[in-house]
Image (cartoon, rainbow over all chains, first blue to last red; front, side):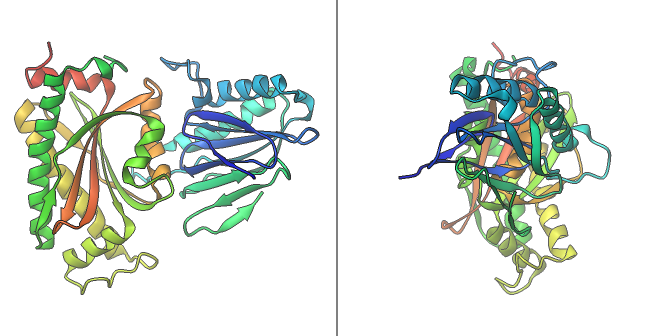
Length: 161
Length: 208
């Protein structure tokens, strides 16, 4: 019996087949999916913000791109993953609202995407595929068995990364 | 007061509920006049929730909703979000423009429909803010409304991200508007920035 493990906002979960990982309604947030295909161990982190450095409350590491990637690596290593085998797929980082003026807060999606890519690069984790940006929400399901990332949207189709 | 929402006394929570009550009451009246139909409202709820639980209030992160968002600046900055299921938004547009009910198609919204939705959000928010300003003698400067149509979780996270920098919980004042006792029309959320809360409470005279 396979379970679908839900990952909430600012949360991180790890799964093995036949279970799958899912996070619903990603807007400016990003779902970082990392897998060690040799041992079929996968993780999904749902981050909200780019950096824990300026945050007043960095305790919840799964909330920020930089600390979430570090946390994923630690947790996956504990369960036998090898950092050199880790591969990533990411989705999210949309701009949900359009304002006429320039508003940094509203561009959080793009900043999140950039921060995630930098954090992955820093730890030499290969980014296999990404579906970021745009102005629509995404619901994603990550399968540890195949490494497939299913992205569903409202009005913007469905795709597998 | 950063994330110390749990330290709010019951008197402070009641004061927040009361301003919610009056603000939302006026907003419901404005909405009723616009669509020329009776609109009821529930007693407002004040909740302090972890981010991931907010979407559950409106039927889950994947629910297809319309969100009208205003960023309010001034001495007590806050955020206003009016969220309603897409089908309810279309019904309100029908009523507002005077089309037969169920004419507005969620898949083929034209500029007029979108504009009508934003105007709905605008009037509800402005009415609400007027009451709040009257009570607190603070001035509130709302932005132009921004409209999003998508999954509830996606609409919410862009707004909640701003709070993520300083907090793990959000205080929200929620009111549901109903049309003729049955359909839940929409949810009105007022999200004060963490530092605004004590400003508002002081202005209401309940900051002990």
